[in-house]
Image (cartoon, rainbow, N blue to C red; front, side, top):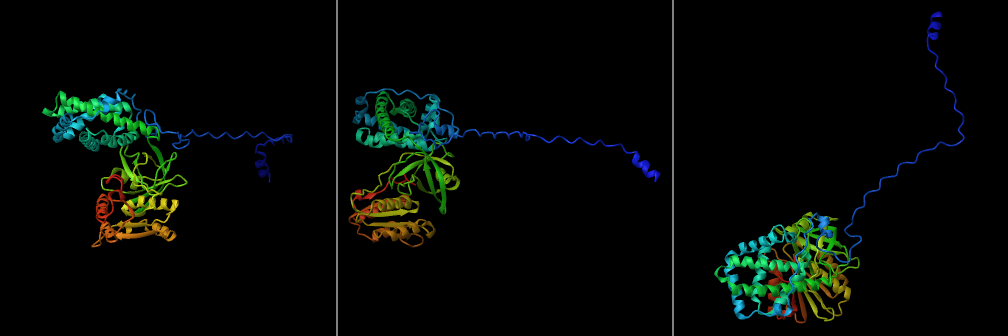
Length: 455
């Protein structure tokens, strides 16, 4: 017992804490720190500018990380009378002789022209794609056509004014043509051989002055009515068939077009490479657009749109082009041939007729594909046919020994009182147009865009 008392007595005493007085006010709790406000993000679509500017510091340049261009060259003023006087026979002969001498070395001559232009005017390089092979071929083709029509200002105007309109989406300005003229003259002088002399140079300068004048006319004419391009966000991407996608786009501002027209499209993955695609729907109240795209071998833009584009990506659209539209006051019946993704604009034409009212006309649609899986829009068209008795839809498969679409359409002749609309692969359009003319349709009643233009 004594031992236990000893052990207890050896422990140190713990002081008892004093009891605090009852508080008269509630304790103060510090407020939580305010959350950090996120940095503002610039939107490509809200608000949309009235016009999309192409040039130093434009929104496309900032969005895609392209270096701002240097100040543009100043245009050289010319008098209209001097520019528009057609070339005489002697001048045309000199121009064509130089082109004939350049033809064997055309690729080198066109490459030399571009090298001179980019060396002397480096700000122009951003207007062209990285790969220049196609540009060299297009330039040579344009020069041939200008040399062919140098004595016909009306024919030159028909070719060059629309070309000037298209140049605007690349960022072309009037002064660029003056810079290009001088470099082109020097390239022709280098590769024109014995055909190049003072008289040939004078003839070429006169022709190029006329060409520049008409290109600038198209450039300025289009600037008065529309922006050079629209930004369009991909809001839908559906794999409709093998290597075929249907894209739904929301443009950054109102996009005017008609069913049957097409637009040039540029992707952020291949800057300055534009490809034309027809619209797959008529104008809609919500402003959305659709494109039907097939990925073709070595097709940079088509493969990007089918296999790489996804909702949220931003494309660029040039202005709507093409005359494959319906005159709703004419009342003629419509014969429509759509092959592959060519059914896109054909379906758009049907939608537009339904929206305006058929007004007693009939619409016959022949929808062609190699295999049944290619008829990806057939169910939609048949639903429209059930709603509208004026519409007939005939699917056509060309696999095996089955007749091709143009041949089958010819078997259903005559087509008197019809206007024909054709869209699809180039061979189908050519074959269909020839077959319909053999059936008695006038050339003006067979309508399609330039073969090879719309995809």
